[in-house]
Every structure is written in structure tokens, then in C-alpha cells.
View (cartoon, rainbow, N blue to C red):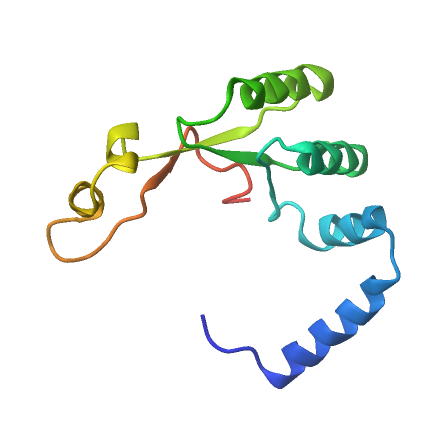
Length: 137
């Protein structure tokens, strides 16, 4: 990614100053208005994320929500996800590691072999359950 230009930095500084006095809902509304459909809410289904999901859902229920499923999430996390799915009729995008739980908790050698392409390049060790809906629009 190329470094930000002076004009970009000035625009961001102005936007930051403008948003400082706005409510969280107004900040989200501005972001959703400016970037939808190329915006996604990442969630861990913690307390703060439940609030964000509620606010985003009120502003634009079509906003995609994704979460990283490490295979080590607490049962309560899945229960929270399931309750939110039922309440808001959302379909969170599950992103999973390409590594097995054993590789995730194992040695750096297992991690290295799991993420190497064999030609010296590296790959991303995550995979989405389905193609991201915010791409290709």
C-alpha cells in the first residue's frame, strides 16, 4: 500500500475532528453511508460487539458481520452468536483458520509447514466458509 498523500492525511484529520463530537451511531452511520457495500463488521460476540451489531443492524441490516472461529471459542460465544442470529436474522460469516487446532497450539514447525506454499511464498492461514458478500459488487 503506498504511503498516504498529504491531501489524504488532511482529509483524515478533518474527518477525525468532525467525528469527535458525534455519537457512536452517527459515526457508524457515516461509515456505512460512505463505504457500504464495501464495509464489514468484525465481531467476537463480546458485550461491545453485541451493542455494535444492534446499532449497525438498526442503521443498515444488510451490513455483513464476520467472526474468526479458531475452534477454541467458548460455548457461551457460540450461544451468543446463535441468539443474535435468531434475534436479528443475521448470517454472520464464519472465518476459520486453515490450521487444525493441533497446528494452532503446536510447534512453530507445524505452523511453518502449514502456511508454506513450497515455493518459498507464504499463504494466508484463514479461510472463509463462503465468499465474502462485500466483494465483487
